[in-house]
Amino acid sequence: MNVLALDIGDARVGIASGNDSSQIATPLKVLSLDDIMNKSKDFQLILQDYLPEKFVIGLPKSMDGEENVQAAHVKDIADEISLLYGLPVEFVDERLSSVEAKAILREQGLSEKEMRGKVDSVAASLFLETWLKAQKK
Figure: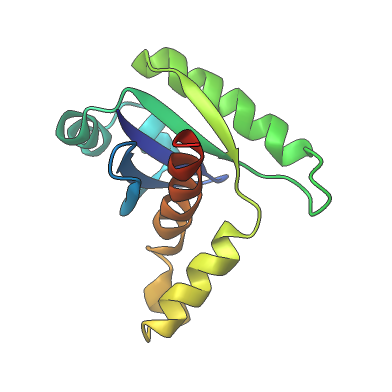
């Protein structure tokens, strides 16, 4: 099954793709939230190229595992995305995925400025990979 991970922020959405048989997630792109909500051509092309059967959405939680105001906001947006594109959504804990993504990009020698367009999609690939591995258990 092909899936797309979405790391939904206030303005941007990191996108990653994966397949449950390979258990490998690949960062794809960062688009504006408006692009996703307005069915932009860029997002339509991603959907056509990867043919997802589901969206895996990163759910922000506090360090003690509790859902907060941002989690409720992400759930509301995820519900809208599910309706817009006719695909189910599943949530996965995204705690520390952005921190880990920045560390990975730093190890690759990227500056803070160079990371700006990549962190969200790398974070999406990290929590998607966790989700994919959990499906095999």
